[in-house]
Length: 246
Image 1 (cartoon, rainbow, N blue to C red):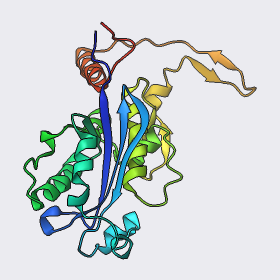
Image 2: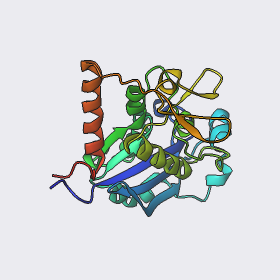
Image 3: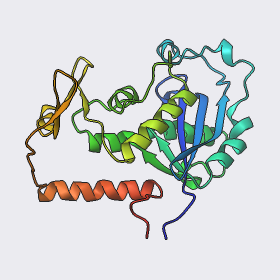
């Protein structure tokens, strides 16, 4: 029997700037929990006082000013609660190198005895996954929301918790079965891939009914079959699969 109660934590951060190496700090952490691919409602969300100014470009992205954070706790004050929340989970992060780098920088600054995130949890980078699934396309969180029809209209600015919620739904769509057939062109408009559309079994008619078109059956080649096996294994690792229970 496959392992039950697979626990994952979708995580995002907001920061004062782009580089921890240049002294930038975390100002917001947002996490939500998935168990067996279901959003449980458990969340971890904190704003943090960075004790430094916020770059103008970063503030335009997330809308958080230094004044907003003056009364918020500092990272060492919330670290125990944070590490307890992510303990032994698989972290789902979009562009994990960025967020993990900032988190580990915060742990090192406070001289934490376990300053590597891998000491506390494993990490799955959905940006890497998306690039493998959609090579040559834009794979930002915004682009993936559009591709997988995840509603992002309520987000005016980036925020760690709301972006975690969006990423959770994108991740579940990416790993849950049918892949959306919407691709992005350079202008950001979505269109239906003509190579896929040409093989639809049914076509809409002007009176709203459908007519059955001739099916064209194209067998997968060896490379495509291998890629399919790789993707099935990723889905198996993401949690319990009702179609693949021992």
